[in-house]
Length: 459
Image 1: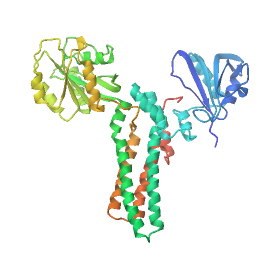
Image 2 (image 1 turned 120 degrees about the vertical axis):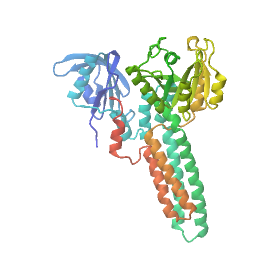
Image 3 (image 1 turned 90 degrees about the horizontal axis):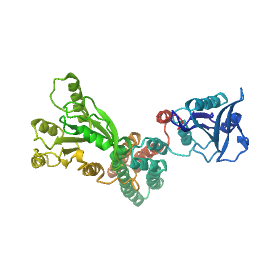
Image 4 (image 1 turned 60 degrees about the vertical axis):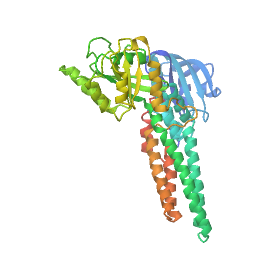
């Protein structure tokens, strides 16, 4: 079945140097040719060429835009369909006129993610690669973009296909047992082989799942709360890390009344930094709301940067807050080293022996590099292996891999209990099917529509 030709603006909305209207489908070249006036008809030019001309309104013969039109014929295109990209000047009005003309003369408005959806439906990429496209667009650090790019290039696909092939090899051995049940030595060999090989597959799936925490951090960012009493340097730390003055910094306690969020790159790790109101008892109604929000953000944080003032002794309030964070990832920052020391750091170490402590002077740019190294070390053992590692970050993938581990564990347990191999085979087939869903084998149309609806329009 031939799909309708679709059209959309593929560049961000707003003024810019260039804006692109993209068409994809069997009539893409013909529709563009109806609107184009240049040295040659677009239907006669070579594939993968760019052609200078004008977009004309066929009804009025008015010249709408001066353009460069790229022609890419199937199957060597992103969607494996004919694709036309009309490069316009980056004005909002004219590019919309070009889009409307393509719609008026035979194209349909593309749905969000429909170009990538067609690449999937036409077999150019699998579902994990399609999801990698969205991760690549949304990546916030170089390392995150590398991981997403690897998924786009099929690293996860290859890993999963190897696992599925291993399961097929096990199933082939099981079939031997089913076909030749009269040979006891074959049954014994098959059972031993099944257990041994199934454990190997399970270990590989577990290895993949272990990367999920790191992968999700690279994909979504590490939810990080900067917390502490008023006027200890929380907002100054936030501004230093993001190299901007987004937070208001004053010497007046209680200046930050609400939660501020900002993404920052720390040694390749995207931190979703949350600057909070200083936690203290207050009668100010607005500040009190901010303090309650700070306490809630504290409970939900994956990393807590607790800022202390080197110029003030540890208080009961500090101890209460630090005690409440005993089961969380905390780095205590002793700030304002440029001032006279009143805080007993040795006492802090003895109270919380497992907690990481970093000394800083934000005003003098001291100690921040060490802080960044500590953050990287806490979650990635100091280094992100984005080149050689396969990271899983997608919640759908994680859920399917967890189900696959459960299914193959059932198979191993059944084999150990001498359950007939044809029964064990059922759980192995289930594992194989679940792994297939990761890369888009046998997925529902509803799921496909849901996934691609999250893409930006024009992609």
